Image 1 (cartoon, each protein chain N blue to C red):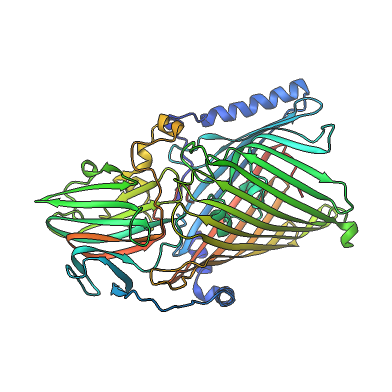
Image 2: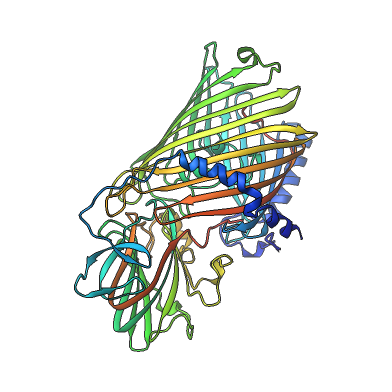
Amino acid sequence: MNLDFNDNCNLYTGKKIPWFLGSLMSVALFSIAKADESGLQTVLAGDLVARFDLDGSDASDSLTIRGIEFGIFGPIDHNFDGLVTLAAHPSREGPGLELHEAVISSSRLPVPLSIKIGKFFLGVGRLNQTHQHDRPFITTPDVHSVVFEDEEGASDTGAEVKWLAPWCLPTEFTLGVTNGWTFGHSHSQGKKPDQPLLYSRITTFADSSLLDFENASSGILVGISYLQRRPDQREEPEFNLYGLDVTMKIRSGKELIWLWQTEGWYRDLMPPMGEIETAIGGYSFLERHTWDRLFFGIRLEGLERVGQKDLLDRAETNRTVAIAPVLSWRNSEFQVIRLEYLLHRTITPDLTFDAQSIALQTTFILGAHPAHDF
Amino acid sequence: MVISFLKLIGRPRCCGALIALLNFMMATGCGKDEEKSERKALSFQNQDIILIQGQDTLSLNNEKISGTGKFAFVASLGSVDGGSSFDFSFSLEDGGSIKLISYADENLAQGIEYQLNRAGTELSMSYESNETSYELTSLLPKDDLNLNAEGISKIWVDVHNNESPLHTVIWVPTGLSKETTGEAEAFFNSEDLIRAEERESGTYSFPSSNGRGRFWGFELNKASLVNAMQAEPIYEEGEE
């Protein structure tokens, strides 16, 4: 087994903050928060993954520090909150810290709006707003990697406004505008786009009173998302992205008994030349508490590029499907051990092949963790 | 021991039910809808190709395509917004050249091109996108069994067309296996060319534009191609 946790601080040449400095910052800031009672809180979250190839997969049979996230957050004044997170991921330069989020936000304005300004994960879909260490499974569904062009998700710098409509069925409208110079995985600052990136989302929540669940913290959240990217059309394709996500949680007391999380995405992508490419896909994950702190879940997923033709004008099949059973041991709110088997099938015009892998993960959280949405 | 146990779990017999479920998921999807076309497909190593240039100057059988001309594979690369690896073996006559063209349009234009030339006993290589080219000759491994001007040479190329700037990695695969190969074994990785000031400005002095299509093929000039395969990228950044 190759342990990939290199302490390569001496490799840093860019603007990244050395690993050890992040650790010192964590301790120092925690001390500051304790000392001044300002409400400043710190968090350090770790995500360790070992993925083993069973047959035909790209798993590298090694243990990887997939992500370490260090964050500070707290109230700025009586109106505004602040959040800064730095994340380390394996990269060519070693596990350097990069700015993940830097946000000033408020939900305590005189108007019934909440706002967020800074760098953040775009407020669309479910997985895109969930850090990897907080996800209920280890591997990333294909549909997410394709439409957000990154396994973790798409983030950008801009502003987001939310309005909670005063209706009997709680409905929240989100509108976001960000720079849009890059999207997903990128090694550069990108180029000025033809127009900024725009997105919107509508969510509604049905709680236990509407659904006749016994527990007050149970409920179903349904979201519809839209995202529009218009980069420099001479360089990159523009696209529209439409999504639907549903999350259901049924609890007994504080205990999560059932989790159902599903997302579907449709993307039409317009290359600088040539025909429109359409991709449609989704995943559905159902998890049940089984015994003590053990949970069993299974994820089904599929992704298809629709309407593509080959050079003989024949419809082309480009599809992936996968099944991933997941066992999670939630030792506490702050530590999870997870085992996932992934059977992934790729179907192309020329061949169909299966890949199998198995992954082990442990995540941990030190300190306070910012509150999550439902 | 742990790995052996995990591999045991993954044996096909142990996951027949899951495979059956995958088959069900596939069956519920769309079928292949074939239409007649006036273009005539030929077969090269059990892959359909169409000739774009060189009907009279290329000779073809299922094992080898030789001469001068240009051809494209009928099956696309899936998406313009994706990545692929290309594994090809070839030989060149003196003065000959071979060009791999990827992520191009139906006529193999507007793509990313990798060209190898032979002059006597020397090989040279460059790559190009959107009229910007970069010379790779000085980076080519010397005295490598798989890089032989007078014999058969073998190259692996990763094209990550979904990254900006364009990311490409190239290997001469002597002693390498795709399952275990990473960027460390490559003789060229375009990420090495990115300088901080270029990253800031978004303007690069090397081929940075992505290919504009989703087709691939080769242009031969006094060359023979004896193997050509396309698959998922060999190297993925941050792979576990």
